[in-house]
Image: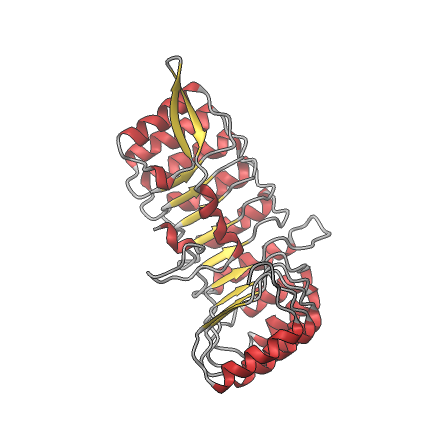
Length: 356
């Protein structure tokens, strides 16, 4: 297709053909020019379809009108499992309609609304919905449009986590979260025993928030992936996490890129991996790598405790001194932000489960 982009007029023939002869379970329409008219056609298709399990609408131009149509279809659809809408400007109203639909829908498992201009109202609506919904396994609410400093959405999500027992993945990147919000999530994780992936990257979490999270990591909470990248946890937060890793037997992936870490914090994390045998992936690029840090991670790679595919740095030597270089394959790991991961062994590479 080259540079061709589908428009609204192209959607009806596709949906008509799929209704006449159902043959696929996944429909990928991302990064096209689908607007509300096309979304309405897709919604009508979802109302009648009995086969499609996943639809990807990432990066289109669907607004609250199209989202409302899709939400109406979700009330009756019994087969769709995955809905991806990242990058569509559906706004608060569109988010509210989808949250209301999920109070009725009992089949959808993964919903991706990152970069969708969600506000405090729609985020709280999703948190409230998840107190009752028992089928949603993954929720992406990245980059909310918030105008307060009291972190109300994070507080409501933390309260939801105390009750919910089915959610496996939660993406809260770029929501202006601070230590207060991180502490509330940490308190919730003491009571939640099912959440496996927590993405709070690109926020304003500092040392106190990281220390609070380290307490639940030390208590062997359910987390398997913890993404703290692009925060400012500094060495104090890294040292607390390192201490927690010594006794933790569940966490497999830790991301601390660009977290204002220096030698003491990075070396503490490296030393914890000598005792910890569970953590397989650690990402540290974007911090201050002094010589002791470079030597520590070089030793981990040389001894096989870390493998190149599971970190974002590679050692090299110049004039007798060890340095660390960036490994580009970290970009593959970051892709889980932009799609809702699938928890099955045959997952495509653009989903977080591909890490394992």
